[in-house]
Length: 50
Image (cartoon, rainbow, N blue to C red):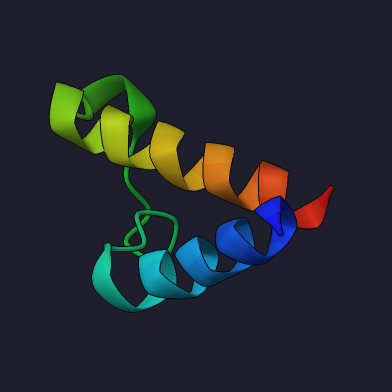
């Protein structure tokens, strides 16, 4: 059940949130909001793959 929720969130993230790797964002110049989005996407992806 938990894994299904994270898989759904991963699909939702892919459609709604921006992909900073495609934009080649420099992490040293990222704002706090951008870093929070990157962290959230990492957290959801990590849990969806486990």
